[in-house]
Length: 609
Image 1 (cartoon, rainbow, N blue to C red):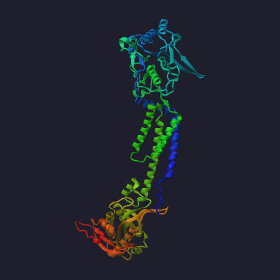
Image 2: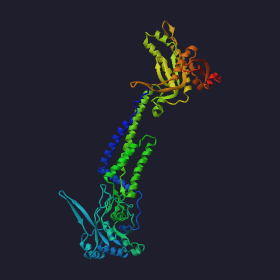
Image 3: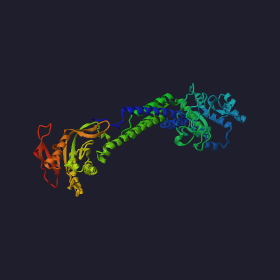
Image 4: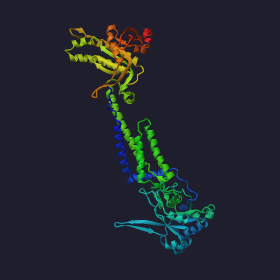
């Protein structure tokens, strides 16, 4: 009776377990991805992906006129500088051909009347002045406060734009400020571009600090002598604080902020350059839309299902898992840079890893259980080395029953019935004697790579070439049979002086029959108990051969197929031909001995037939 292997986990159990894993991962990761710390991690992922292959700075990008260290030194004026200086700069830039000028400086309070008048006279519809918006919070209410440029400046035709920017929880700028009259939006309109509304989205950076074309303030005051010809012709110009030595995140700085590029350099970016970045995002349509919750859940579900379908069981599991994670990251990169949509890769990657890891843990636990069961089931039949090989590669095992060519050995003690009768009043000594006999015989079988089938009283049955392939099974079986005879001789030496009955010396002898042929081998028995055993005509002939050892006074007798396979390694002689049930012709039987020296092999001609 071929039995089902009890330690195999059914496909239904695996599917149910996998469904639980998938559901738990989906719920857990979805809940985690809605938390504030996780969203900040996703924004850091946006920083990395958006700065891999940043777009080049467009030739029409704004030029930065930097209030920097050389300008402070050259003008040698105390900050804030007189507004007449800014008036001179506006006139110089306009004269040099600038089409729009943005002053990222707030002129909210009156200063010297003459200087204020000079600046009012210089500004016009091509100039945008910075304004600020602040929320003042108190116990009772939040108050929105706008700080605007002097009325005489806006009355002169200058536009105002809110230069306030929105920072994420980690203090970095990544989002377009949603002011319809934002500084960058107003500057874009002043430059002659149509802009109905300011889009919502994540900002694409172009690089670290000083990525945009930048000149010092003092150079822009005299562009005809300090800069190349037509440097400002047709350009949009943004004037603001921008130090040559950009401040670090740790040190901080006035009007300088972290952006998506800061993770690479550790440096902050000046407010004027940030306004240039916002300007270019609006002009070129580079804003990145963040995927909505539904899209994020769909992508997470696809990644989790992919991990569920992909079974992590091969030798390339780690490599395949890394490739899958790379595909998730690459997909996020392509969507961002080609479709301008940011689908965070962290949640899908985590979902994939968790399902794959859970599957791997499930498989590992199943394989460990299977390994333990194999060791438990076969440790009584096989040598430890073979058990280890079988446990390491269970695919070598076909437990449902199969046909195999086996070499079967049957060893039985001659005259043991008489010995047992004489020791019937001393059962402990009788059992001890059987164990002393079977112990060395069993060790020999295992040492020769055989499988112990069963013990039948004083008889031991074993076979070779199952459950694992053994190409040299016939020779190993014959070696085991001859070694058993030597082991019995050694045991008789140990028993010398022991007697049974009325002083009769205790001597043991065994007959060994060995035959090679096709058998059915597998787990046989009942659902409550079974053994790995072999049945078939070849087994029956082996029993006949063992019985003939008494008739021919040959300690080991082998069948014709065994003799054919080992004829070149042992001394073989034909003993006789015997009638075998189911065969029309008599079957030759052979005695076998160790080959010594260069002794010739005597094999009857019938062996070749």
